[in-house]
Length: 525
Image (cartoon, rainbow, N blue to C red; front, side, top):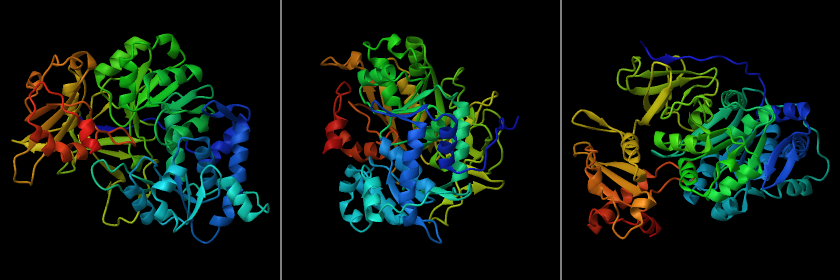
């Protein structure tokens, strides 16, 4: 059987992103739209604030071409208001992520050349020299700053951008190489918002809490489209997370793997605290099946995965929230098709065969900006994801690794992510990171694992486990016990570049198999 996965269809209206908010404000004006650290704003109030700021922005972006506004995606109410205002004014939003290093933020601004910037204070200080070259507004005070500059002669915005107009310039995470600038249209983002809301079982009474260091427009737009409440109150400790889930009566909680690990490892959290939570959803990397099962058993909450990329407006697949298959990223979103092809011949592969994942749907990006050398689409409009995986007989997608991350040895595929899952299946392992090292294409491939033990086996002067206990994972040439796995601040993915950079130092330490190496101190140097 050839593995091409099709799915159900839903109607996608030809509207712009801010029309989602406008429609919900008309339909449910008194429903709570956003809760920012306890402060509540109704849909009617949110829409009014967005309209006022959009009126102030409009004179700055009028003209023959689409103007670009650089905006930091901060998890604040000001960030939400400014996001919709920029789009309602008809501008293209350039998404800037505050946790990224200054050099990457500078590159993003220089590559996209926004007409002006709206920055939070932290980002403004981080790129202060560059910001001085642009007209720059403070995210918290932008409404007042624009009103003072333009006076009160603001004109009501009577038209919306067209569905096919460009809406967002967003950068890929850069996990496997230099990040690329992706152009998304209003249609791309609206389609994904409606598809995600449907697949994630969101409705008007849902309370959505996305606990990430950046504002995630994917979940925000989905929540706004159905009139759900969107919670902004980031927390990075298990007790604080549980407190927020209880206080806001959250129904949908979204986080990265480390956050779910914190909840699972904290015995003080009572299941009754989380009684309103219907779903846990993990992004950036699939949770280990053992962790998903443990969370579900302990708290009685379904744990489901999702999958997507910046090029797919952040989402293309989701597991069935009520009947998840642990280890799978799920099935297509509505209106989306998936197939798996041979990485060399590009021929379709049968069910269960591993190859490159290709996706087709209305959420697919318009193009890569400033990269005419890249052709990401195969014949027929299929987007080549660069990920390898397979479809099972029930159309569940399993993602194995990035194509550029895998290696070959003696004709066998070596997948770092798959090896990490093998380590994390051990009851004594908290997390693992695997890297592949080769000086050039002709050199032998070295497989190196970094393993963090659970506290129960690592707290003693001499750990109950040593690197020798994992020799059954025979693909690994070197195994080091460490205190920490470095991760990217944006999405929580393993920072393999940092691990590879510190490998020579780790080797030079010549520690015994029972010694735990402090990666934390190495990264701090």
